[in-house]
Image 1 (cartoon, helix red, strand yellow):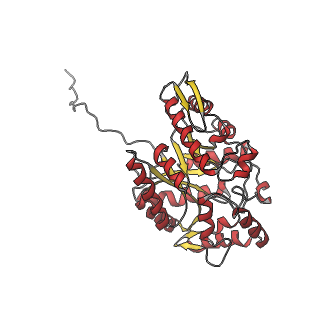
Image 2: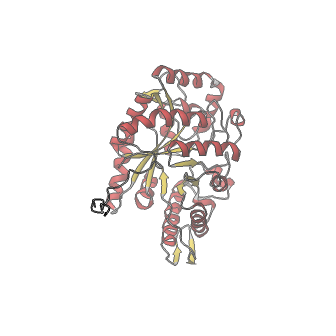
Image 3: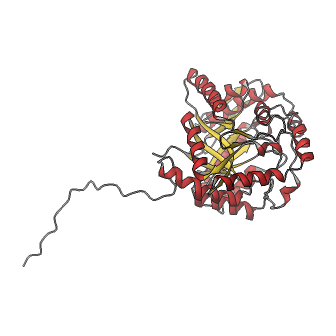
Length: 388
């Protein structure tokens, strides 16, 4: 059975031939308007991802992008198989309604919902939505939220009187089939605890393999102590070309288009982030230093100069990118959530260049590929000769 699952990304803040920023204290750049995040354009990306063999598509959450629930619900009508990894924040919606929405989504989409739970690393943005808890309290609330939601999905009637959430007699009339998988990321001790207790897939941003291994070991160890197993995924950008020189030339083109004043302003904004993961991303390029952005062979930190959140890219020939993916896989990474610039064209570069390499290595298979016919269990019978 092939070991790797790939998801793509839907740029619901807009797309461009340049890096579009936003999130974690960074405002989107003007390039976000080059290709508005219309259903028509996002539908192009979603159908392309589906055709190429991506299993799902991540849709972000925040004040800087379109709402993920509404946007992806529309996109289920222009796709057939693609799942949608909907990012949402527990502080903005109650657990019972969330569980009900997920159940409805599963019925109407025929089981195509995945959930990316985002606790929220920026208190200023959370307050704009009416959430005044601090960071550790938000993680504690996320734990309560996931406990309630999972119990509801099993058909239980839930009474919960917690420090942050309270429900009485909560119950779903119709359960989701299947219950959506829970994806979750975070680098702080509080985040690791939530991941170990409640999540199906722990997502990390694309740090160098040595640092990723440390995270995997920490989450796996804590989950094992609780009698659980967690799978692991990684969020990265990709620049894959027929040759290494072509890929690095594209990275240099993106870098050359980044105005130094914009880099400085974005980095000042990101420096205010409360997110431990964002702090670790900034450390990879030392808060905006462009002198040495290849932080591991074929891993480039240039995207994070003007973008919050995931800030590293796989850069190289199709074979080199496949090699680095395989290196992450040996650490325990099974799922890759990828994006590119622009998202439509880069999906083709990766899907037609890297995925066939991984397929030849036995690490990936198209999820919609027809199965080989199984051997018949009916005993062979010789044809009956015609009687005279």
